[in-house]
Amino acid sequence: MAHWHQVTGIGPFIVVPHVQFDSLAVCGTPSTLDHTAAFAALSEQFIELQVIHEISPQARAAYGADAAGTTLHHIAFAVDDPDGASAQLTAAGAPRTVTASGGGLSVIQHDARQFNGARIEVHQNTDFFRAFFGQVRSAATHWDGQRLMEPIGT
Image 1: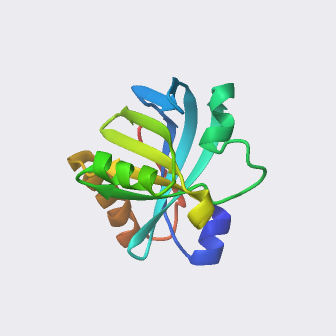
Image 2: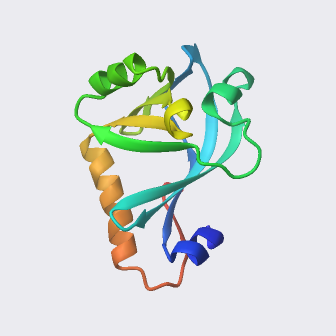
C-alpha cells in the first residue's frame, strides 16, 4: 500500500481482513478463499489490493492465485443485471470462472486475459455495494494523510 501511495498519492486504504463469502465456486467446484482486500479511491475509480492467505488447491490457477509477484488481477464493474452481463462476456469468449456471494456482495468473475490481460468481475449493483464504495470515497475525501490503512470489519 505504501508503494501505491508513493506512486499515485492515493489513500487511505480501507482494509477488509479475511473477506468471507457464504458461497464460492471456482469453475463450478465449491471452493474456499481467505483473502484480505484493501480499497482506495483513485479519481473516479477504485483500486483493490489483495493478499491471499489460503485458497483451495484446485482453485489456484483459475482464480489467478498462482501468478508470481505483483500482477493486475481483475477489473470490476457493478451492474443491475449481472447475469446478462455475464452471458455477454461468456458469449464473447471470456469464460465464467468464479461465482461468489456473501456479506451483501454477489460477484461473477470471467477470465478475459486474452482480451485485456486481466479477469473481469461483474458485481450486482446493491445498496451494500454502493454504500461500501461511498465509504471508500468519503475516506479519501476527508483523509488527513496520517493513517494509510483504515481497517474495518475487525
